Length: 159
Image 1 (cartoon, rainbow, N blue to C red):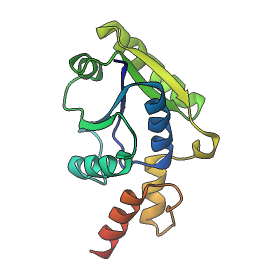
Image 2: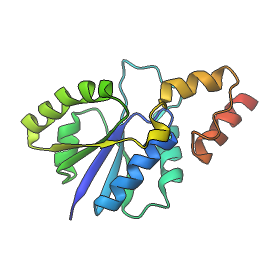
Image 3: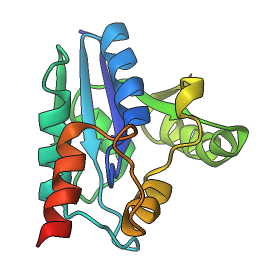
C-alpha cells in the first residue's frame, strides 16, 4: 500500500490545502492528514476544532484520514504509520526554500521522502494567516475556505 502524509497546522484549512490533499489522494492509496500543533504558535482554532473541520471537509475523498500528529517528529510519525512519503504543497520559491532543509532532515532521520506539489495557480496567494486576518477585519473569505471552516468562523462571530 502506498501511504503518504500531508502535515500541517491547518489553522484554518483552506481550499489550497484541500486541492493539494485531493491530488495526493489520486496518487496514493492512503493519505494521512496529520494535524500538527506547534506550541510556539498562537492558534485561532484548537486542535479538536481543526481536526473536526478537516474531517468534515475531506470526508468525500477516498483513502483520506485525519489524525493529530502529536508531539514528536514528523519523520517518526511517518515511520510509525507506515508512510514513506511526506507530501507538501508549494506556492512560491519561498515555500521551497523553507521546506527543503526539513525534507533533507526527515530523509536523514528515517528515510522518508518528501514530494513537493506545486499549488494550483488560483490558490498561490492563499495562506491561513492571511485568511485569518481578512476574516478578523470583516472581509469575505467564503470563496477560499471550505464550508465547515466558514460555518465555524461565522459561529464564532455570532457568539
